[in-house]
Image (tube, rainbow, N blue to C red; front, side, top):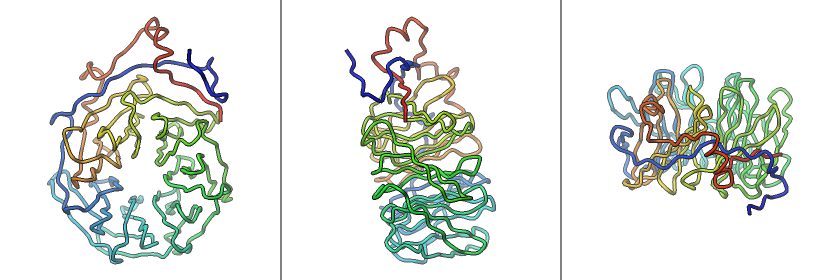
Length: 358
């Protein structure tokens, strides 16, 4: 007999689908050796031209990979040992990055090949993640500062907002299509929304305690997706209803990086089990690609305009790429298991998807 915590309503259980991990081969994944030995590639982003940009913490560089020529270009960050952790691109093609140890936000112009760096007001803020807002402002989370900050590129001024929960340790951050700023409180075990016009922050307690979430992404419908790392689940939050849903990961892994593609599929990295996964909300099914034959661990992940899925691998200093167009149910019927109503009812207690109240 399954026991449920008080915040989970058994009547709302819905079993959707099952899938099994799938071993990767060269037709599914390609790998490219990065420009540095021991460079530690972390954050990654794609620009409007399809160029792939990523930061390397150990080599103190931002890097560009051109998929057409399969060539890397490396640019050294002016501040030594700055430990860049995340990267983003704005609508003008300017590259932005955050320096954890340098305590700065960096700007790189790919045309002029010029760097600018801006000191974050809070000392030793340990800023980890950043995102470009709807108006072009740069938003970042301060892990040690317990704040969310915004940098205005026009007047070059920072503004900081204190997070209501003490020692919340904010990490992942993203902007939705309405311009709202969403971020994760790893220690606070909360998802939070900041309204840029007022600076008001609203927090939503994640139903499962100590879930240790880190990254998040926003889909085209405005749903917020993130990983419950402790309980090995994929989570979805609907801002309209204020409700959480959880989806058991078939490989029982831990979600690190997470992204959404143009079809609304959710892609994620499982660093510890060396897998890249995809969840299809339309089919309600998972596919997990096993990279266990390689030494590298997938960490951060993005999708590009041509439906290619790129991810960084720490340990081997590589980029990996999956052609999302080839991951359709029709072309790969063995990748997921579809079920009729009878099978769904029989398996409800084995692999439930639960809807949770905040």
